Length: 452
Image: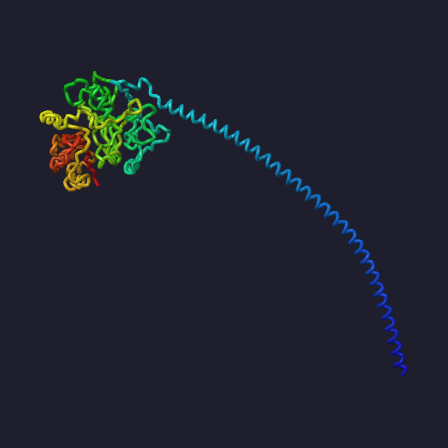
């Protein structure tokens, strides 16, 4: 009993002690809470002030940003205005510089196009250059492509593009004989001839020949040829005392495949004319030839536009081509009022240029087929490796027959004779016509021999 009472007493004492401890803890916590509350209140006040300060700073910064943005916008406007002004000034300056450069370029072109008086010769009413053309730029300054390899040269011809070359790709030949140009260079709208000059037509070449041939009774233009040739440079010494100052030199040629030939033996010069036959005109143009062993000048020969010939320029901007019906002979005599004797006399003339060219019975397709079936490569030429282009001249008569077949350019090895044989054995052609009347017409055609 005493023990129970003691235990109860001790329990009460412990509870009292625990209660006192809890009370102290609570009091302590309350004090802490009060302290924390005061601190929190103080911090709130401080933070409130900080927030206000921050808000004020933010507002000031925003105002500053807006001010800076306004200033920046104004600066950009001012800068843009200055750039426009600078650009305008630069544009004006560039325009002036461009004009100056353009004038300088034009002046250089004019200077380069000027031909020394010593390099000109007056024959009749014409003024000719005394040297073959040796330029590598068109009149507008664009470069003319040089084709050194046979592949490059052939590609230019096949694609109908301008090209030039030195004979044998030797610069020294260019200095003496000028460049060899394909006809696509001659006909390029950018202008091959220098300012104030042009590539002559066949009509203008014939005028030159007539001026030199005068009243010669030879009838083959040989008197003119003697005067055109230079007295040096040909395989056979000319030593002509009739030198006109034209100084024609045998610059040779380059065929469509790219092979060079005939230097010292032949002089070839392009005209500005295509052949008049519309079936041939896309592929062939007219040229002039002089050979070393004889003096006749042959004007109006036909060759592939892809071949390379010399170019000799004539002063002036060119001529207005006359109607073929008004050329050489007054063909009005062919009308029904003319008596038959006069008619036969005029019809007997051989024409180089006619209104309607002679045509093979099957057209160009038929002509090519005939050649393919009948022309044989001579065995001698095969063994010797001879290849190239034979050019024949012949006359198609009023009844379509072929006569007076001659070789204007041969390559030997039996090829010349084979070309003649094929022409002579061919069928009659449709004759050339003037104002509907058949006339004798001179033809000049190439015959290619190429080894596979």
